[in-house]
Amino acid sequence: MLDVTRLSSRYGRIPALACVDLSVGRGELVALVGANGAGKTTLLRVLSGVQPAADGIVRFENSDITSASPRQRVRMGIVQVPEGRQVFGPMTVDDNLRLGAFMRPQRETNADLDRVYALFPGLTNKRREPAGTLSGGQQQMLAIGRALMGKPKLLLLDEPSMGLAPRLVAEIFATIRALKDDAATILLVDQNANAALSIADRAYVLEVGRITLAGRGDELASHPRVRQAYLGL
Image 1 (cartoon, rainbow, N blue to C red):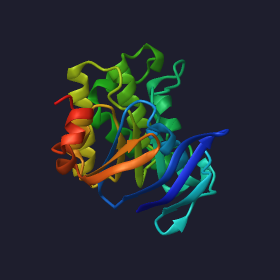
Image 2 (image 1 turned 135 degrees about the vertical axis):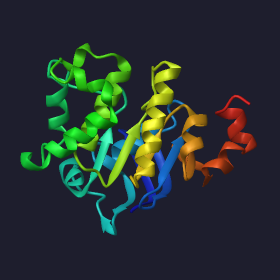
Image 3 (image 1 turned 180 degrees about the horizontal axis):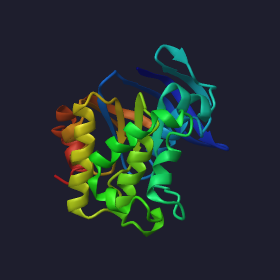
């Protein structure tokens, strides 16, 4: 579904990504792990179109989208859950979710709204409350639900477990696994390498803007370099 070839990006004169090759097949969950500052968020920003590529090619469903706008990519089915949740605090939970479907006719969204509330029952009793009053875990659920309202073909998840208590981290990853089991296609970035690799079909390690390791999730979880650098083993 997604093919990235020799992708580079920079902030001004500062390189952020260099010659990144990466792919995500339909129905796969692919994890991207690496330290802070490795370029993981930058890569997702390039894929969603909010950060320009300096070189290389991004193909989605065999179409070159390297120069496509963020709006065009959302229409194609690429939807990102941003780092830090970024919910619309003064707006209700219900309105936040409906905003995720802003490119779709309203008559098509009611069934999807019910699906999101079934996936995240903790939001059901909060649907009329401002999103800014939710806990961190509830806001993360809302951010994922908002993305699902866009009917993504490819879901980009940026640090969904950041800042959450262990119980909530387990809940979020259980939800991601459930989406995977429902045939969702996901590119997951998370500093919780152990949890990310445990549910990934395949994974990449990104270090200082370059892919340094790639393989099955279980292979990388047992790789000595990954165990030492990212799993604390």
